[in-house]
Length: 127
Image (cartoon, rainbow, N blue to C red; front, side, top):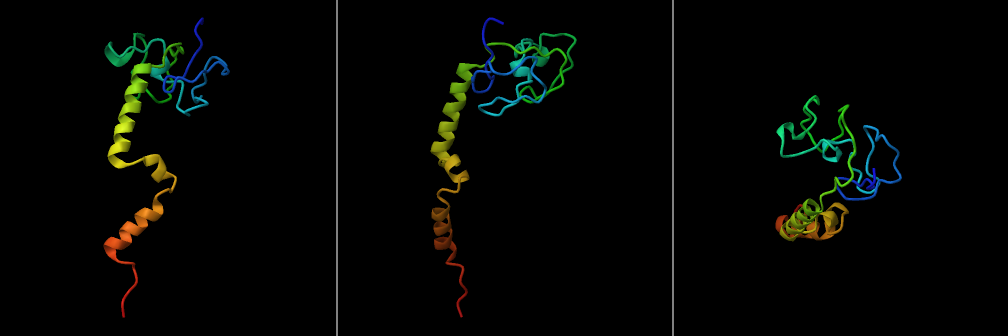
């Protein structure tokens, strides 16, 4: 291959990985599976089953590791436009619901607890 492989999901270089890619190989940056339809040279969303290999069995989950014997990793699998669209959608969700990464890290937990206590009282029983 003349063009270096990159992750289909995040675009990170996969130059350090050995070929052929094992079924359970993951991207060192984002952790997504690499032996997936979206990373294959036969993948084409505009054809039946999204695969140009006629003999390949249909794979339902195109972004999960699979056992397809026709898998051949392709350079250029990363779609810059799709990545930008995903980032924009995440930004809109964060604006609507707040920064979910911050909430997952436990930040803001004290604020949430204070809000709950103000709504339901401080949890102490009165005599």
